[in-house]
Image (cartoon, rainbow, N blue to C red; front, side):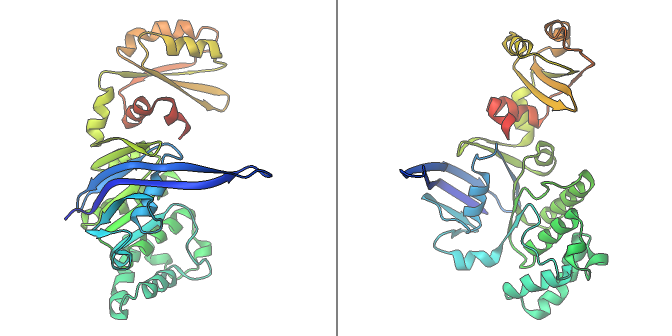
Length: 326
């Protein structure tokens, strides 16, 4: 039995526009999604904002109904078998909502254990184990309102595991966390997977998916663009080098000339405190550096380095400019 099986899944949202003359408009969030996740797999889902990641996660976790197609989790249909399925899955969204701040961390988990009808003799043993797993034992009896954002997110993870689910859905669990808190949370996710949990993870952070996931799917405009392992995904850019150029006052004309260069596969630009960081994907990037610098003449080039491509570079190549807005 597969952990997750999706066949021709679609979801359409209807909305209205206009003030005087109201016009109905249908928005396709998901279209013809097909996907299989095996038991015990840590599966990642990537995509730009609005691509359909959260919509798909909500359907699989029985929060949202599909418009077409079907999805099974643990062999149970997410529409017909909702009551049987919910006790066997867990759901964690990024952010701070969903906790009772005036209760302690321990009481929060106990509350959700009671909602899941976890027997008292089981919860008495499980709650301390969960607090230990997420590293909150020493702060368990303090009010959640005094927790840091990272601690609150760890408590979300513990809450999502209180019913001992077979499949755990994590929707951008490290969003907004500082690097140390995010690293600690990734360690918890890996430990859960080692204990046999099937984990379905959505994330904006390429390095996070690269570090954690055995396979990854990229969804774009409601459709799956690619499903593969992170290492296989990176072979898309294996023939490229990445040239990073830090400079100031890059003109639109210079940027256009760079993008039109025959030895440039793609160019992305990020602004950092008045400076621009250009990341240029190019075959034989080292040999092309003098040409790139000449094109940027007058842009106050400050630093040039080369590196091997990452999963993020493969993502940018696959989705093009849409990836830059994610």
